[in-house]
Amino acid sequence: MPDPFTYPQHHDFRTTMNFRESQPIYLQIAERLMDEILAGKYAPDERIPGVRDYSILLQVNVNTTTKAFDRLRQRGIIYDKRGLGCFVSPDAMQQILALRRATFFNEWIPDIAHAIRQLGITNNELLSHIEAVQSKDAAAPTESSN
Image 1 (tube, rainbow, N blue to C red):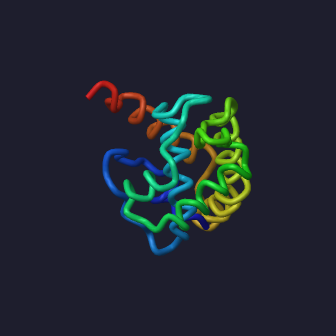
Image 2 (image 1 turned 120 degrees about the vertical axis):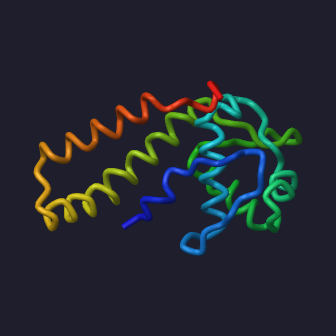
């Protein structure tokens, strides 16, 4: 089961990362960049930091960051402009949401459903808890209102 305490990431984008042992660093870097795109730090067709700059920011080896960028390129989230660097794909947000939804439905839900059965949680009980959490989330201040 994916670690429910590490997905999705919520990064303070101004600091270096605290990497988890349970996942390769390049995947964590790719997740961070996707989080930054979803948070609006980089708009569609906007240039993102180069591999070297991002490596310095996160204090990691350039090869590790290159692997993360390659993964994002393969998934259509970023693209290269020869001589200019990497840019956010026009449909990056939709791509990221589709990837994360697929992970949620294909990896998380089966494990959650199994736990629900084991614990004897009813659908009404589950829905009630989900609604309570959503209410708290809706009432919580956002980063932009701080």
